[in-house]
Image 1 (cartoon, rainbow, N blue to C red):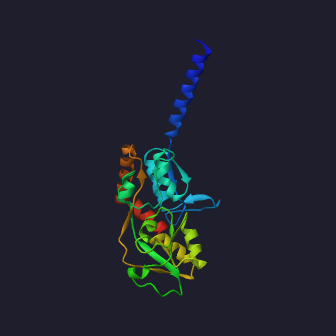
Image 2 (cartoon, rainbow, N blue to C red; image 1 turned 90 degrees about the horizontal axis):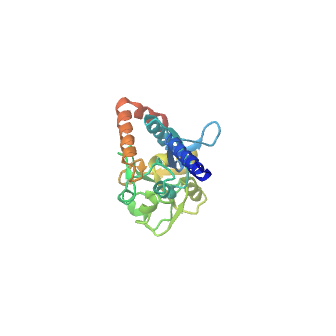
Image 3 (cartoon, helix red, strand yellow; image 1 turned 120 degrees about the vertical axis):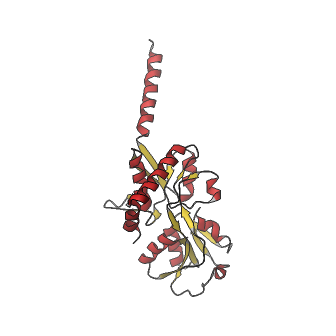
Length: 242
């Protein structure tokens, strides 16, 4: 047997070995600036944590895999998923028809709504009609980013909710349109702001997978159904939604 054949065989063996090893991991993409669903913290200060991450870890465990988390920009998640860089999105992502055109979603695992954050002295917003013409800050690629354009042309989008909050605190925008739980989380740390609940429709979060991964989708849905029935889901909800 000549050297070229040996080398080709060795290379193929390495590739197969690598593919097998990759199957030991469930690679989850997230944007870890959406507390309490995903955020950076822990003893080291750089650990990605949160409700979504705990759910994803359980999904990985049930599939016999180790969870690996990739933190990236929210508007890059679907691109990364369809490019095969991640296996699943766990990032408080609302199920929408537009997103369903390019990815598949699990059964909904959380119901949310949009809320408005303003500076505490602002008393100008009492209804949806009062949003007309306001300068919005939103997270880039979020449902708030899409929704804001129904009320105004003055929309500034940021990579994270934190950046949007800072823009509001600095008086550069009139309000932040954000999901209810993360908004409440940021409000607790920023007492100079206030939260306004308006008549926004409900939204439902789901885990996203590539359309070529029906087995993974079925596995996710099976885990969600199991933990909702056995109490683990409620325990995680109580842990994170304080």
